[in-house]
Length: 120
Image (cartoon, rainbow, N blue to C red; front, side, top):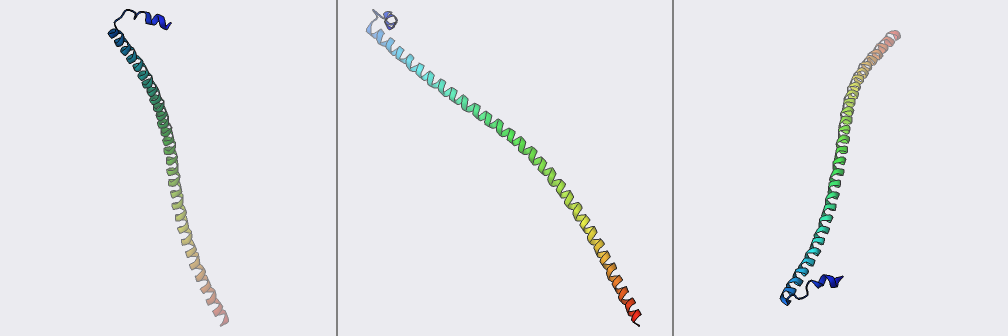
């Protein structure tokens, strides 16, 4: 087969044959270079797809974290309101305890006074 491919070159001058050989060598070189560039292109395209997938995953994770953050902020607000209510309730109860404590002291004094009167 190679012989048939080379048959058309018979009778050509050495200078022309040398130029043909140079051109064929250049074609082979360009084919190899094209293959290398095709491989580089495919590698870069695969890396690009990986990066796109990574970006998409990070966007999804970011959205999840934003929703979680919003939920936590709402929970914090709810807890803050509950804390304020409990704090207010505590103040009310402390005030009631103080009133009752004052009433107890007053009642003790009344009892002491009445006991003193009974002794007389």
